[in-house]
Length: 139
Image (cartoon, rainbow, N blue to C red; front, side, top):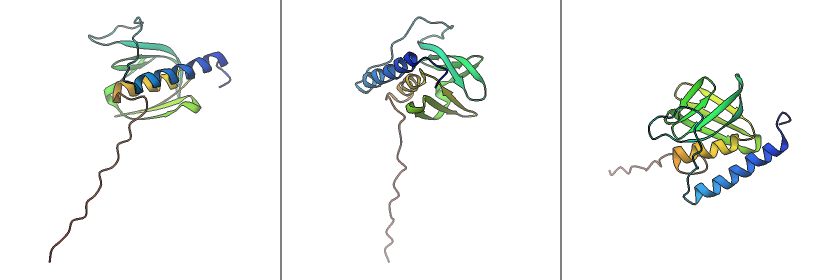
């Protein structure tokens, strides 16, 4: 990612690793002073620039209930799937009506925050398909 400072890349990846360890031990992301109007009970966890596929660079704000990308807002409860790729600095969120891919030095950290809010884990949860049981027929 040549458009980002190598120190920012290292800081974002290091923060992701530290937060992932904290979340896996039962911790939670820490709230910061809000930069946007929050709803009752909502906490803001961070804000930073990201590259949004098809929309260019936007300011991302992550709260306990929403991901705000410039003029667009995504309630976290509307996320139906997410794919993290820390090695590529990307996070793809699927909502009920849209797919958005983010890229940037703090996006791996953002992925851990979203997973912590949605699943209580540092990484996306994979739910195994139910096993089919064979029905025995007696003759």
